[in-house]
Length: 113
Length: 113
DNA sequence: TTGTTACTTAATTCTATGCTTAACCAAACT
DNA sequence: AGTTTGGTTAAGCATAGAATTAAGTAACAA
Image (cartoon, each protein chain N blue to C red):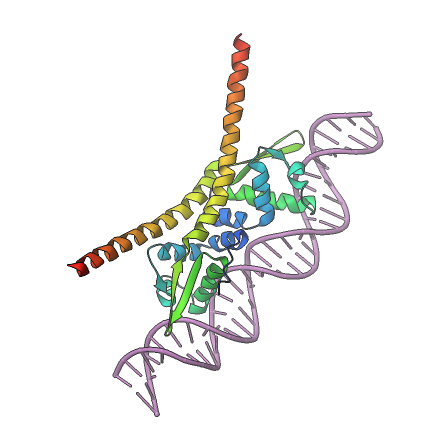
């Protein structure tokens, strides 16, 4: 059923487009139909739907159709995954800086003796 | 000096490529030269340098040349910015869920009376 | 049943991205 | 001085991405 296997390539690719980020922004306030999502944009409906498809296949958004309206919502676990990846790398770098700081402090300490 | 004005489009675009994420991963352990960065990859040096250029113009990485070797390092504030964007949207969604939960709990409460 | 709404599909166009090879430059050895 | 090392520049190519228009379907409403 789910073809939204979360994948960092697809997720970051999806987030790289301002239209798609605006759509996520909208969805962060609650679910929306395709035409609701499309309203703020000066582009054709098929274009919006293509953007939506990118978001869905990245796993960041899910959607289901009821009658003739398709409702979309954010997938917070997927967002979390992307967030985590960045955080992990950033944290690693900061920890390394800390160790470097310790080392320099120690060296300065040795100098003083 | 800095053409790395952090820009979400460019940052997420930069993060969307596995080669570039691997480069960031490498740099999260400490600075590296261009050829050090290139070593793990089965692609030409110019290709690696092009990836590096994407990272630099996104603001995620900086580099400077000393003699003939260019040293690269991660820019954690830029990473932070991307991380923040995701976190803000995800958090908004979760808060909305909480309010919805409260509402449903209240409604159930009313039912019981 | 006829029209309108809410999408969906398909074909096309144009630009951007990721890669390659070849040639070049300048610092550092020998 | 000559060579290797580390990186840069440029040109070209193939694939992927963002948009368009036109035509189609299926649900609901009058």
